Length: 142
Figure 1 (cartoon, rainbow, N blue to C red):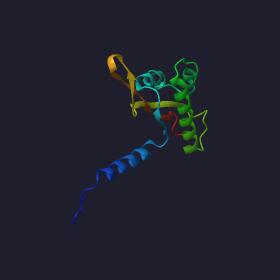
Figure 2: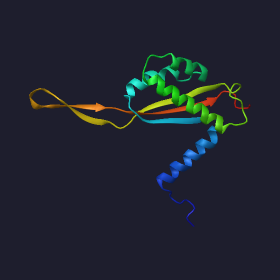
Figure 3: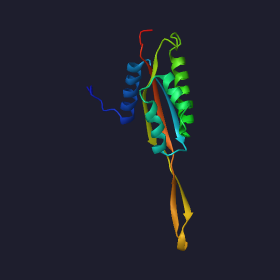
Figure 4: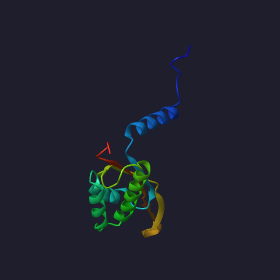
């Protein structure tokens, strides 16, 4: 009699993620968690490669003077490897991979105290971030 059974929120979220995976198909994801760089500095690097072709993005990251560029470059290579394992039949050269989306979120903060004048202590927040990178191919029919 209960055709419309109420599901838990976690079950609904899992079902939604499975549906998105089924729709996406060719895209692959790589995540970098708790990277000890502030999110603002990481976003400066990530904005350079958003929407770029993979070859161009790797070139930009390799020649960037920012410290976070090395970490994003390693993450991009990981996303490319993930894409290769998901799509074994297609060749990497003919697929025209591009950076579909990149997002940077704040990670945990380490809170430290620095000595200050007159017996005070100033709080220092050592920030970290989470980066999610999605790579997809332009040619889906290969």
